[in-house]
Image (cartoon, rainbow, N blue to C red; front, top):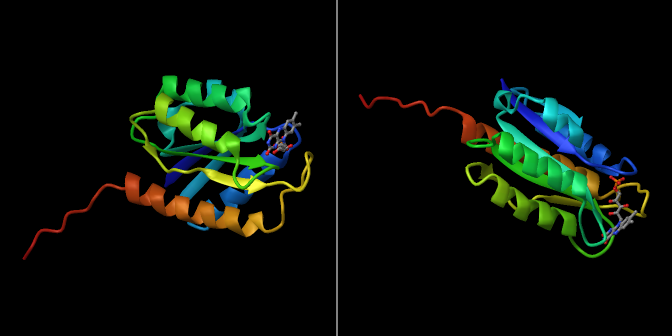
Length: 164
Ligand SMILES: Cc1cc2nc3c(=O)[nH]c(=O)nc-3n(C[C@H](O)[C@H](O)[C@H](O)COP(=O)(O)O)c2cc1C
């Protein structure tokens, strides 16, 4: 069984909701289990248990939140080598989350030994307090489904079949 940790920051709850939608996509694969936790949870987690760690947060003032960036930095210090990592986030303006862009950059710096799936996933919200725009929900499931394939592909041991 593969294990995924999802760490999010949120003010109004939309990024948490997005995390849960991505989880639905990941868990269509029954060989993977997910744990969803708020950013501070990173301190009490034993990251060595996880095959993948994904980080989420909203965009605020054109950038990722401090909480999301701190969680990435801290996880990098604890150790993400060899794990599949990626990001996701909510935003309101433009075509893509600036926060996700910043988190992606931070993650590649903080975890050079990880297998990073880039770019992370951006979901638009209808207003500052949400909700997440309706059309983003199936996209979030699809992101989760694709991520589950990446996790199995990058973390499964290769079985070598001897030639006859
Ligand atoms: C103070 C503040 C600043 C914001 N700045 C931006 C911004 O620069 N760009 C953007 O797309 N959305 C911006 N937003 C909208 C947030 O992205 C949106 O409220 C957030 O994604 C909701 O996620 P949450 O419920 O997880 O907190 C801002 C919201 C607040 C409250």
